Amino acid sequence: MPTVLLLLATVAALLGVAFWWIRRNNLAVYPAGRGPLVRQPLPTGCDLGERLMAASAVDAPQSAPAAGSGVAAPERAAAPAPAKPPKRKKPSGPSRRAFLRNSWLIAWLGVLASFGGASLAFLWPNLRGGFGAVIDLDSEDAVAAAIAEGGGRFEYPSGRMYIVSYDPANDPDGDYADITNGAPFMALYQRCVHLGCRVPWCASSSWFECPCHGSRYNRWGEYQFGPAPRGLDRFNLSVEEGRVTVDTSTVITGPSRQTSILGEPPSGPHCN
Image 1: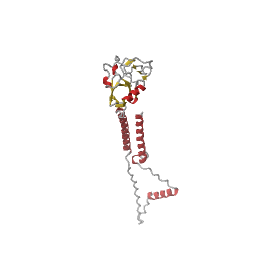
Image 2: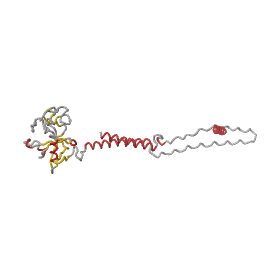
Image 3: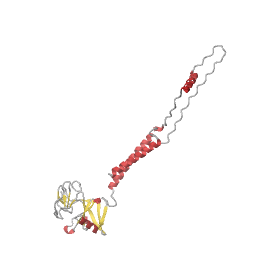
Image 4: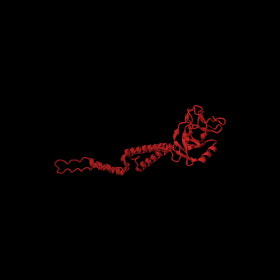
């Protein structure tokens, strides 16, 4: 939605500038340098009569003098030279064709710039801690308190992840040691691996249960039931100088269906 609004605002601004420029140069009324038409008032009755008499006197043939009369033929008055039409002033602005070409060019550049900016904003990680970047969650104690307050998980919407408690004693072979890096937490991707729905937390069962097609995962995101091909994907988590950080730029593929390291049954009835 912000991308569409940005595009519409850009196009509207360009059209507004174009219409302002047309009105300023009056190109819509007098295109291609044509000036306004000057209308001459119609002559009144007296003026019309005088003009007709003058025109008939000039165009009437002169009678030749009688032969042998000795009277010289009067010289015929020369017709007045036609008045030259006034020169048209060249337009100060560009021609209509140049204006339309430049307007289309500016409009397309604005559209491309809008799409480019929106694509860059979508693909580039949010440096303030959004999905796709290394996110500094909080202190270790604050994250532990948030998990306890959330009934077993801490949801971080802008990072599209859940943070759950991780006890290395329940993972004797260290299958998840590479993604927890010695921290007492594990970061799970909220996206269902079946068709991409967001998987909510079921408080009654203490499992993650997808409402779209019924896939279920235990507290560590391991597959338990449904059409999902594997467990939930996850992110690399670490604790540095007492701060919990999660790298959401790389999604780590979840464990296979056969993986059941936690072995924790549901704590109550299922939500789906």
